[in-house]
Image 1 (cartoon, rainbow, N blue to C red):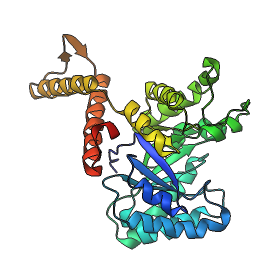
Image 2: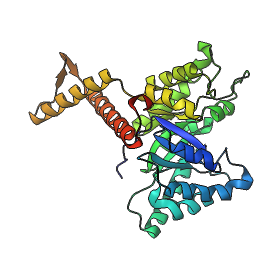
Image 3: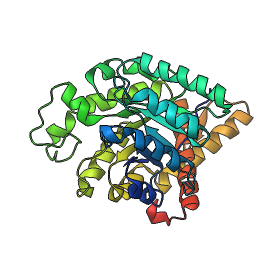
Image 4: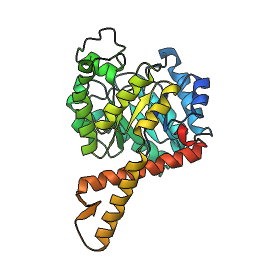
Length: 319
């Protein structure tokens, strides 16, 4: 199954049981709106929240955004109903399901089997995608296996707070979501897991998505966090507050210079192929195959960002 190219610069997590927050999210500049059934929903509201997810997915106003929701993790008694109740009612409107706390590739394979059966029963022709959230030492240890566990997988997501807890990182008063880390040494502790997960994702042809930044009142800290993960190959970042979206979108949107150079590389590559030549030169420099692939992705991201902005009726500064 060919994986679709989706714009995932910013992913806004919204509690599914908060109707006003869901309605507001549809007016914001997030590329992905993820309706949450997991941590943000109390146990006694899980069933009601599933119905809310169905209603939200089927509602108008999405304007080209990715329609996603997060189930409860597979060790709970809620996950199977999260899948069946939502997919059977709103499967045709659904793009992606986010699976939290994935520790074993068997979890993704099991969900793949269930979805295949439901899609067959419902007569769905569009395959529902999956995202696996890596949030523990066990999951990070097996991240390479998880990344290739299903052709439905489109992205890996880093769960910073739970990962830190799973390896016994001292919090030191830090929220656990990467904020309040002014010291370089504190930020460096995330480089290994971020790099390991990004490597697994890219080797499998998946997107890599960074965890949210905890302090929504610190745009400078958020920008630093985005810059670090983007430098490591990440495609986007989760947001926990609407005020974070503009910063995230800005950092993960290719600059005009990057897009212009990437277009030159792609054009030169296509011209060389038409002539039967294997080597490509741009601006007096030879360009290797990896650079061509990166240029192609950059152009696709820029074009997708423009489409999303136009569909949402947003001004350039809001994308």
